[in-house]
Length: 114
Image 1 (cartoon, rainbow, N blue to C red):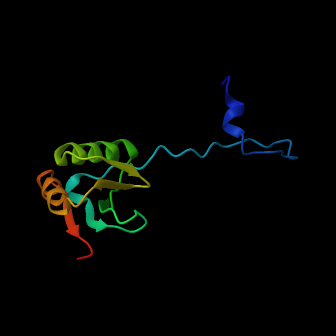
Image 2 (cartoon, helix red, strand yellow):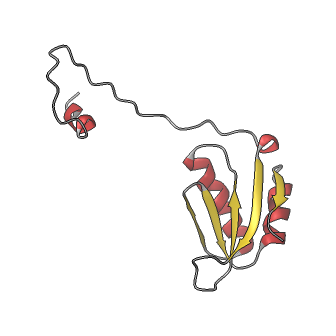
Image 3 (cartoon, rainbow, N blue to C red):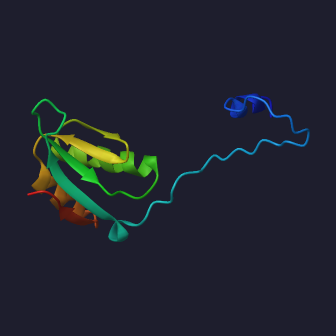
């Protein structure tokens, strides 16, 4: 490979003449089917200057599928949001609507925290 050195940027030096760098890149987790996902939905106001967001956690799968689910929820609720750190944040108090959407998509959903 022409750009093999870019894969080894974290390795500084090895005195072993037989050293072979092994790239431990993981291809991502395989996404479970919706029926086996246990998603938790909650209303969250912490560290958000008093603004409320609907937080969806517990998704097991790769980033592309999580982003697709986040986009679906944002579109159906008609609001903004983001997907980061394995969580979906939907702006505003849409707990009931998000739970209905996820149930219609076949996910197991549980409300957390009141």
